[in-house]
Length: 272
Length: 284
Image 1 (cartoon, rainbow over the protein chains, first blue to last red):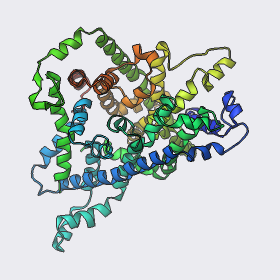
Image 2 (cartoon, rainbow over the protein chains, first blue to last red):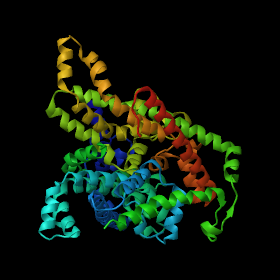
Image 3 (cartoon, rainbow over the protein chains, first blue to last red):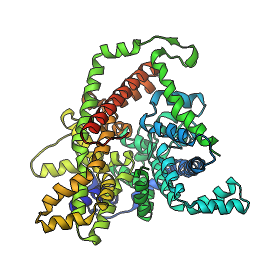
Image 4 (cartoon, each protein chain N blue to C red):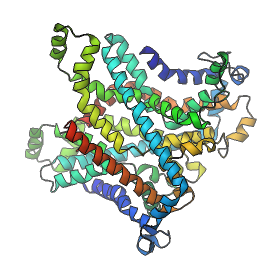
């Protein structure tokens, strides 16, 4: 049990050890889980890299804006789907759930995004993946738990639907909104496939794409190759360091939000 | 207030489904959906006559079946083990570590394992010390599938336990008390109480897996697939990406996608009916 769990973090510790060791040891592959001959300069070299900062900026942008758009669209739709006066609720719900079963085909959706003129724009990384039946279902399930008397009381006090949504439903739904935020933030930060197909210019590459080019093509067309000439570190050490830098945001938010995502995963799994 | 969301589902979920009809056309970007030439089932016929298609079919089936066979029971076993663990102070930190890889991107996971499993990497260094190797785990046709499947088990095993743990928490404790009174051992209790109680969850999850049998994880495959292992590692999804997007053969690759989804749908319907007949459980 413990061994299995430790095997989950051992590879990360190995990378940390490699990145912190002296180049001669790292080169000879002598590093296990503890760095040999400590140095921290590899991180200095990584952060001196313009590409990393720019890609990090792109990643943060698509993650923040993407999450806001997702929260807004999904909660609005889920809200209307819980209101009794909304016509055709049941049919709409079915149509949304159907998208669960039929996966969106790759080529037609690529052509759609192309037709919409979003190729090589960061919107292509935000809009097409903004909503999912899963998110809407989770939020709707939660909204349904809000006591109906609150709505009536608000109505009597003269609130319109918009005010009920912003003043009553949203503030009461922070746990579910936190769950969606976590799910979507992680998936936005981690995704690289959509950027591989929709983004053409190097300046708009998110961090994961930069990283992938570095790992798969060994630094070809990332501008990393000229950089490596000017540094004393081996490519392995640079890679190890950059992988850790890209993991860092996840490692930071992960323990803070752990209790939310377990609950959230449960919310989604409960059928009516 | 519902309009933006509905417009989203219509545009990004339904239009692409309708867009599948380009599989029956010679789609041309400049003529568009409405003016491209109709060719009926031509693309499908080309597909079936093509030798590589059957290789891709075999690879996808192998990857899918192996990952169900090895990947599906893994979280279940782990959840049972975690459930037997009585030390709560140990359980929480262990779970935190187990869930972690799920949150790492495939690029990161790819980086970690290509580093560890490289011919000159740490793993081979260890094998060398005990007089084995070197193995090129990711560049060798015999080990490639096993390596890729093991890595995805590593990434998702902990996360997969969540749903089983929730189901386990819902089992009535008096069942276990009664079993203890009757003298049932721990193993016997797992066999006669725990597993039957988990059955509904297990079956629904298994059905969903079978429905997605031919779907590979494109982000994972693009990380690990390399020319050395194309003969065993090329699956439908990577092929659609390569031929469709990199070589712009839109209609032909959409035909492959349609073929794949049809097989998926047939499989899902089949196993669902079968399971409803035998166990009464089903996805729909």
